[in-house]
Image 1 (cartoon, rainbow, N blue to C red):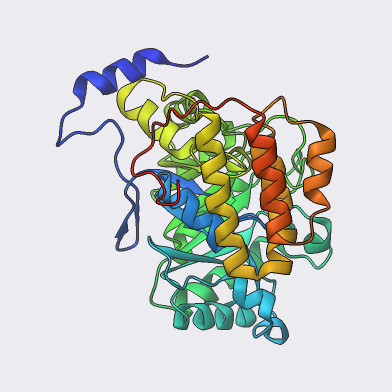
Image 2 (image 1 turned 180 degrees about the horizontal axis):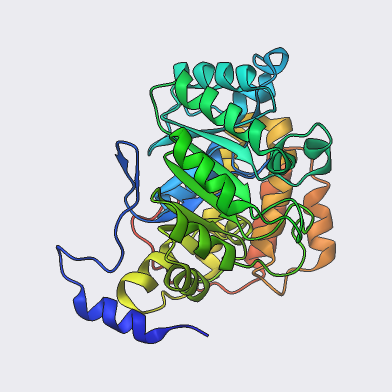
Length: 359
């Protein structure tokens, strides 16, 4: 249940020098708020990071890049960590199991402009855990320490860590990992409220995160099942977390950051985006995808994002979605989307400023 009394107290105390929530500090960087876009494979690319930053994310972390030196110059690897022209703090997530390779990957990405290095020990994907990377590392605390020490000592920029609560329900060792992280010099720790065995099933639990927050002094970031302003506020209040990290809740829903920020600062809900605004935001996103990946790859990358945007519009039929998914060229994809939106409400109300120029 939402603790509205805590919100009331925060709002009564609010003034220009005492905002309801302190800004999170990561090394020398003070984020503009405590809302972070999670690194998501195949999703948190530069176009999506830019869009979420525009709508209020204080930090947008890149999707994970492999530390394997054989893949370092691969086009797809370079695109994952491409921050060219990006506003905001540049954070790149690296993945691997070998301490020296991870250290080298941190150096490589720092030289390419990363301002924060994030270490992935939270991915539950089978292909990642099969090589003992991601959340599989949580089973080997000694190796965790060697990796963290190697990466922190290799670069002069902040290093953060993302984990799960443990390997399975019988081995929740997030508190022990957090202490190792703090002793190794990790600047902030994000915790997804599920074990690796849980994958994305069931509900995330944040009681473990609360214990971690009580055990360490570094910033602790809550991740998992944060899709509404109420959920974000409840988790911040109930765990003492310094920030929330939003993943799936932002898919097709980049304005969620503005909605959460407004709610926790003023205790009021922003209106839901109008059909016109959803259309405009989607078109802006598509422009960025086509430009970033090229037309052929951009059309393919756009399909999942389009589906997430359209799920907010109940009147879009499965046949329409199927036709959009079969489009091969940007012009086809755009024409089909425009046709779908033309059949919907023509409500032009918008509540975000500044509005994208093309709208």
